[in-house]
Amino acid sequence: MNIPVSTFYRRKAINPNRMKTEADLVDRIEAICLEFPRYGYRRVTEQLQRDLWCVNHKKVLRLMRESDLLCRVKRRWTNTTDSKHCFPRYPNLIKGVDVVRLNQVWLADITYIRILTGFVYLAVILDAYSRKAVGHAISTSLASALTLRALSMAIIVTGHRKIPSYGH
Image (cartoon, rainbow, N blue to C red; front, side):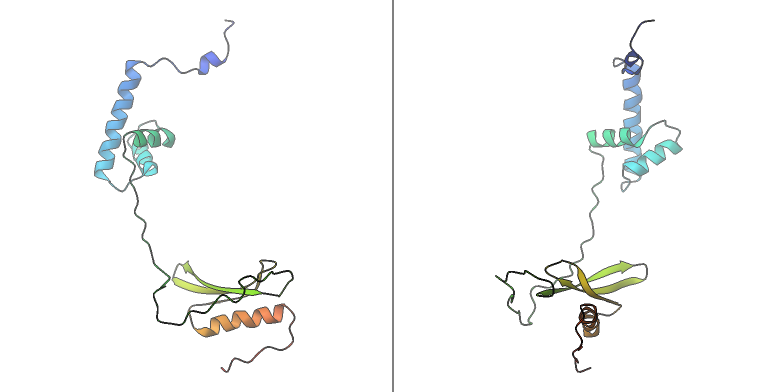
């Protein structure tokens, strides 16, 4: 036929039947969104496919975005830091220090990790020069023993001979 292959793949001009089916699809999407207000485009796509609509998630996302039907999920925020406490605040002792070698400055941090049964706490000692963890410890409680275990591990790993006693 001497026509380019791209002609086969080119979109047809907008025909009224196609617009009608897209309008019907938008109506069905609106109905699903009214029935299930927490559904996002993935769940709406699955529902449409269960209803025997031949549609993919990209089209549903585009139509929901154009119709302003995407639900905005409000994430639950857990405030984990209390900056308004009555405890003493200590000055930054390494401000202005130029870190030029390993084990010159260590940094410490504690964070929590959500697991299936609740939370565990992770204490980490980092070397400021290499930015690598030199000690860590995990515990289910936020007791001072957690940080002391991480410090002991850092001291052992870095090759210091004497481990300080902590009075425990």
